[in-house]
Amino acid sequence: DAKTTQPTSMDCAEGRAANLPCNHSTISGNEYVYWYRQIHSQGPQYIIHGLKNNETNEMASLIITEDRKSSTLILPHATLRDTAVYYCIVRVAQTGTASKLTFGTGTRLQVTL
Amino acid sequence: DGGITQSPKYLFRKEGQNVTLSCEQNLNHDAMYWYRQDPGQGLRLIYYSQIVNDFQKGDIAEGYSVSREKKESFPLTVTSAQKNPTAFYLCASSGRQYPYEQYFGPGTRLTVT
Image 1 (cartoon, rainbow over the protein chains, first blue to last red):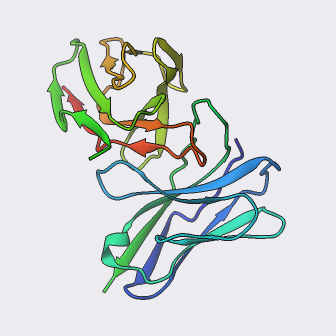
Image 2: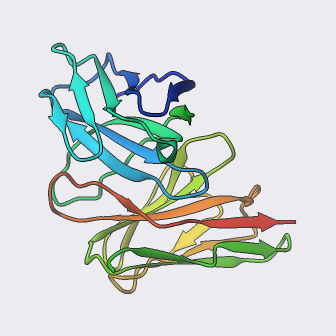
């Protein structure tokens, strides 16, 4: 699986958009970008994923550059409950087999009043 | 409610003792995983299982053992051979439906003294 690079930490004011970048310059054509987040002392939670098109769900939006070498997770209106560590993971979406995830150290997002 | 349960939430053991961590899921997922997390670090894969009676070593399997006798259960034993067993242990599962995201349990924090 391709290696990812994320900033160690970011701050965001409550109500503003949080934009979390991820660099994955060695991504292969069949690898997807997945985002998970981990609130303190809890298990990680899946947020969103994408291959090359931008994606949006009830939690967030994912913007992937045209060359797929980087992406940005957008939380449109951050709240205090969005304070967490956000992990960007690149992997092949394997069918019918266990999907091994490689977690880096992620970005610690602190949302403040 | 469908989900993954891990028990206990906190576990204390003396050095030299084996200890078994429980993981149960009612999501009807075939694949299950065990991860270890140390303070300030990402998750590292210990073992995973794609199906009942089958499991494979992850990146840091030494000092750990698992079994998969039932689809719903994937217990992890931390043996006395594990040199630094104190950590946060997370269990996860994933199904055969795209996008194959992993669902995580709440974790067990093991302290060995």
